[in-house]
Length: 95
Image (cartoon, rainbow, N blue to C red; front, side):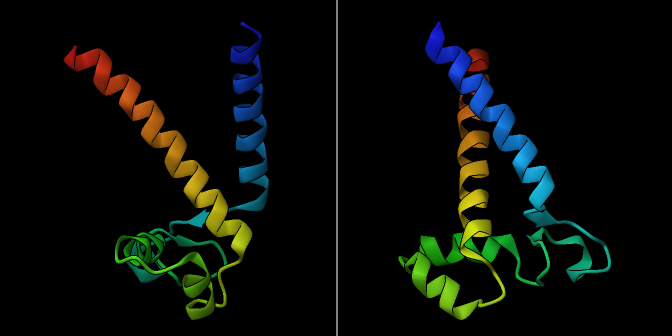
């Protein structure tokens, strides 16, 4: 029970810090509304394309210098949370 409480608290803190630091920007005026790293014109998809082809995180950051390492880590953490949540929902619907 204590672990569950810690996870909920940790998730809440994460959400607040993510909102304060603005990690992702979706604006119709920037690349037609494609999700980009906040303060850049670098699509979030580029990060996943790099990882999918086996490129390192360091290579991505070198190629897209306007993206901060902290932003990239937060996007990966957010993606993990979405996958974990989606997996729980999918399991409930298909079991």
